Amino acid sequence: MDSTTLFDGQTFEAKHDGPRLHAQLARVHDVMRSGNWYTLAQLSELTGDPPASISARIRDLRKSRFGNHTVERRRRGEAPRGIWEYRLAN
Image (cartoon, rainbow, N blue to C red; front, side, top):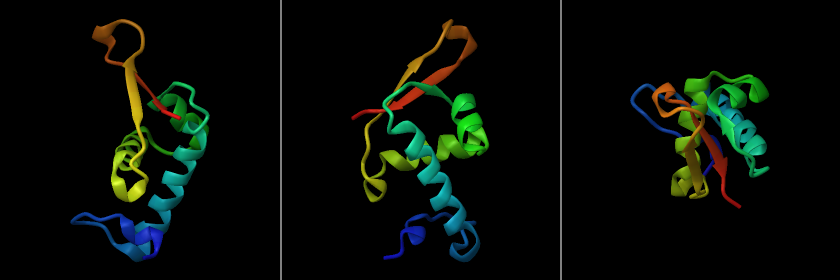
């Protein structure tokens, strides 16, 4: 199976969305494999992808079809600010 067809969804079109989503996933994975902690804003700055897309790719990384990675999360700063950071467990 082509890796770009692993994505799905009601509005997903493999021809248009598959390569873009696969490239996003690769960029997020490449940054996160360092094992460092990153906020969505930091990942956005490093990858050039929107925070909402990065959040979706982080969810994808946890799925078995994308490697069943362990992605840890923790709060950064004061809890009421609602800022989370994520890292890919080694």
